Length: 264
View 1: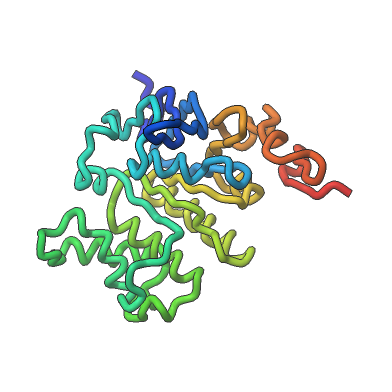
View 2: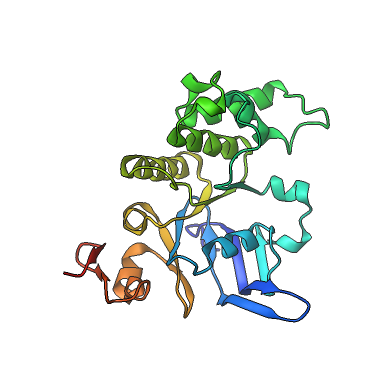
């Protein structure tokens, strides 16, 4: 037994993702074989329309795979009921929250729903978990504010706190830096990096901020028309994986700096 090897939190086996109807089947990506390990920050990157959201929806059981299987902690995702899945992974979407009239504390406390009784009453332990999540995301001073009073950056931190309060091994975020300026994009991704180190949770997020993801992530999942691969940013650079992300007529990847640049 290799004690140095990190636990596999999520694994896919020959996964095919896409859409099917009675008449047709549209394959977005096939032969997807990835492993996400405990205590890793993983960015999912690729061009617009390549299928990043489709992959995340499939990994979270929002959408059925066309083929293959997904395992969370060695258990097939098809075997999870909704309650079990809510205790295994938490999901942060870009869609507007149902009610912005909730206070920040109330919204973060919604993360405890998988553990509360049908009345939804919070125990002393639930309140403690919520307060800890707010401390970890540095939003304690916002606890009484209504969500409609928050900036986009503040609201994103609240949504991350809610995912932390759900207390799952895996947190998945779909475009967590959308609508944020450059400073707050970097701030949110640095926060995710910090949370991985502090909590040893596994965090997977999709992003267009490839330059930032290269700098901050332990691993990247790179989606292209040809394949889906996962590795450390350094090894992906060595493999030339980022050169195939965009047409070369306008944008090129500079392997020395680890950044994309516009062709002159």
